[in-house]
Image (cartoon, rainbow, N blue to C red; front, side):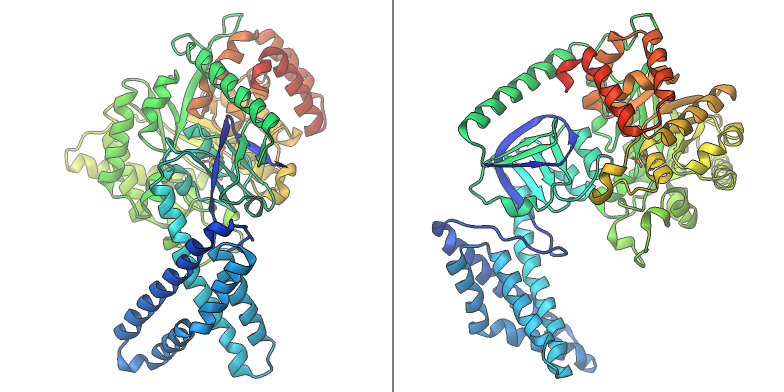
Length: 578
Ligand code: PEP
Ligand code: MG
């Protein structure tokens, strides 16, 4: 039995056999196989070779005569792949070392490449690059099989990976994928956010977890405590089966709160809205008791298909969402692409610091055709319900004014074509950088609402990458610096009499709710599965108690002290959640 501690990012317990997603961009970990699985792995090596030979032969044929240099490269690769002794070294390794095909390919090819690199003849040492290319081609085939496997599952599994993209996570079939664990990521990385929205238990930041499992392992993913257990003993397994049942019972009980208001014991009503990534989540959000959508992350429309959405793609997705929440607010955020949310196909060049680079509103303002298609669809959809437009990562007045000017231009075009839209559609911004928090009094004059994006606000205030597991312990929204900025934004919004909500992950963390209420927050937007639990906390407290607690926190100077204090307070209210 091996117990690993990571970061809990999505609650729940999953117990199943693992399926491992390796990535050819990272080292392939050694994973043992049973002697009985040897022939299966050897066959996979052979198939990968045949496929690579076919692909290269076709590519070689497709090259014209004047592209002789490329043809030569293909010929060299083909010579290697057709060399039976080369393939035999790999299959022998599988049989002798009892490891997966991926590990054998990667180990043997890297051995050969480093041997070439060590030779002081430039012609030979340059051949190392060819070997890495061949490795990459073979691994693409082998790893592609795992991805196909996950698309055609017939049994329950947990997915173990170095990292997953938000799109991969969103594509999991929830009937069979019961949980996931990754080596990379942080609590507010977008993969974690998608897991929470889908209600899949998940743990991230688990160093080398991919090396610990074999296809025969049993894995427990405890998304409440941030623990992954490989090959648990009988007692542990039994204990976890009980936890899982208890978790389901609690979930069931909380679901009965669906039609009850989120009202404190002293009668203050809190608006609970949902964060969604896909239109089909709207129905789940309604089912969980959401009073509207507070954040629709529309960039997932792009990320899911890998193609730039057309105006009609946008429009159709918005109609689907608005229909579910007839008459209730639906806040649609324009595409927040970039950082960990930009499809590679659109990367013209790698950015050294993508989080500080061309992302969000900056990206949209430099890709106007794409941006205008979305804004036009949004305006057309604005007559169908209580639609509101939200702009991500607005950092200064100029970005806000520029965007509003574009919106006005599109309104004029719609007027010319007699297409209806709501000329008074509310336009708000995410406050998620220190700059926008400090400029809040001025930004508030030019927009209709704020939503505090604590995920990015924490990242930019503390200069800590939200998705980087190596600095995950430094990333904390409970940091007094972040809380100070939040307090000042809430104050500025109230003074300007504009609506303000909190839509970062803090809004779905039970221990933060009392603090947020005490700081004056009355509107929260969070992952749909978390709504009942947060409602339960709200219904168990008085605002007076929350105010007292918030005043106490305001006098504390360390995130650790604040976190411990909040946790103790929340545990007294809803012990089952911890
Ligand atoms: C945030 O930054 O807090 C937020 C809600 O937006 P996202 O997580 O999509 O960046
Ligand atoms: Mg953000």
